[in-house]
Amino acid sequence: MGGGDIHIDHQEEGLRRRGCGCSCSKKDFLPEESFQSFGNYLQALKETPMRFKDRLLTRSKDTTEIHEIKARSEHEMKKTLTWWDLIWFGIGAVIGAGIFVLTGLEAREHAGPAVVLSYVVSGVSAMLSVFCYTEFAVEIPVAGGSFAYLRVELGDFMAFIAAGNILLEYVIGGAAVSRAWTSYFATLCNHKPDDFRIIAHSLPDDYGHLDPIAVLVGVVICILAVLSTKGSSRFNYVASIIHVVVILFIIVAGLAKADTKNYADFAPNGAHGIFTASAVLFFAYVGFDAVSTMAEETKNPARDIPIGLVGSMAITTLAYCLLAVTLCLMVPYKMIDVDAPFSVAFESVGWGWAKYIVAAGALKGMTTVLLVSAVGQARYLTHIARTHMMPPWLAHVNAKTGTPVNATVVMLAATAIIAFFTKLDILSNLLSISTLFIFMLVAVSLLVRRYYVSGVTTPVNRVKLIVCIVAILVSSIATALIWGTSDQASWIGYVITIPIWFFATLSLKIFVPQARDPKLWGVPLVPWLPSASILINMFLLGSIDVQSFKRFAVWTGILLIYYLLFGLHASYDTAKASGENKDEDGFKNVEDGTVSSQNDAL
Image 1 (spheres, rainbow, N blue to C red):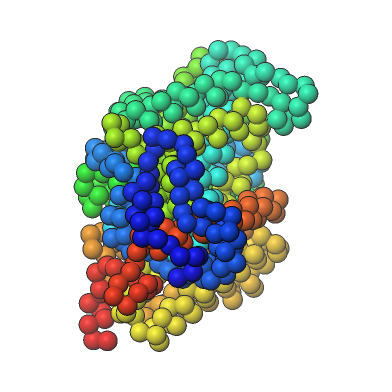
Image 2 (tube, rainbow, N blue to C red):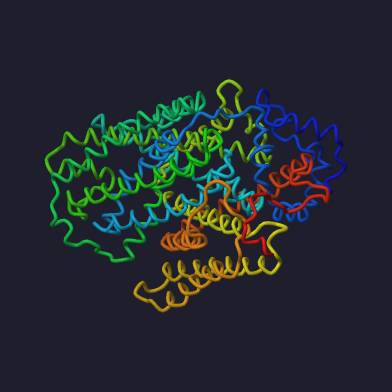
């Protein structure tokens, strides 16, 4: 297999040590054969092309992710969650700083009162992605979320690039929410946010407003997330109920002060303003993917996950739309305050006391977002570490608490450091890019899952599938480029790209037989629903600025360098030592599942 002679005894010792979180020796971080000596590492680097090809093409099995990979954490996570917990985790994960900050900003700068339509567009996109996530979470109920799903359908490499962007999203997003927590706490205390920050004049202004409160909040959240998932669920449940009560107050009290004249200029910047705002407001929906990482701790995944994910997203979308309508009916969109839109809106209609309720509600919302984010990001990192793409020390699950302590502490430490130093105004677009990119990949993975099974799908049907998916992707990218770069009034390009997308999806439906039926719960309207998810996610990407794409490219480049120097060789050694996907004929690009009845005649 390459990589030098690997001794069986050494393999078994390395496999036994995986996930051991009780020490911090080299074996806990780099136990693989490629890192045991400098000569081994040089040999591994020489074999990089061969190893990269192996990891690029080899797909994991459902059973491998569910049993063998999960076992590397040494202890099981406790199955304590029901659909009720997941609904409240979903609400807690999503309804946070985004609605209280971004709504006012996008209504004033881009969409006007039509910001409600922006929330509808973003909500539809998020809901389509929720359906795709749900089928995977039900059939592969592990902590890895999209990382595990992409490993099964698109291979290690694409899974790692996506996972790296998810982790960036969690860390930067958590830091942004932590700093926003300080701002709303200051409002509650009748102070300015910088009154609670340390101004370091020796540092650049973007990094000189040090925020100790954000760090303290991160420490408290870390303790809650480490102690118990069920305990975190109960805290989130209580906090989310209070949050929902506050949202209902804002809607009812705000509509009592509504003035329909404020809706006279409904969409001042037309469709372009609506979709530009929608791309940014997608950040307000980020977080539901954290719920999918809790599938490993769910009592009945087939029942609980669909209800939890779809139910929480439906409730969230409705709440967002009602809040957006309320804000724009209370005050003219040009007079909306971009920093504290709801608080200032109540002051402008003579209800200054209500700003304290709004601030308290925002604090509750941001606290639950931070908690669910902490729970989700730790489980992503745990599953990545189980494959050894990250040090296996991070995969350890504590025997007493049943939680991934090491991964939780490391992720929240990174979040706290960034929150302490950095202003994060420019990063909401970057976060949306990462999320939309990953949601697009999950939709592609679902198409691959339904239409391709090794040994079942014929070579001809495989070629048809590839052609159809490429056509869907290219037409979606072209539509986004036309929207992002050309005259918005021009419709000629769409006359070409949209029909190509439509006929590519139709061809997939008619000419390629499904190779697999879902075992427990399936996405409806395949291939139309996942194909529409790809199109709308790409379209929203076309509304994001060029600088954000440059930052996205830089981060992806850093991930690629790390993968080629460390992650690739660690995961390659681990896969070969453990015999992942091995059968009597050797290593094959295989995966398991229920073969579709459509293939019986093949």
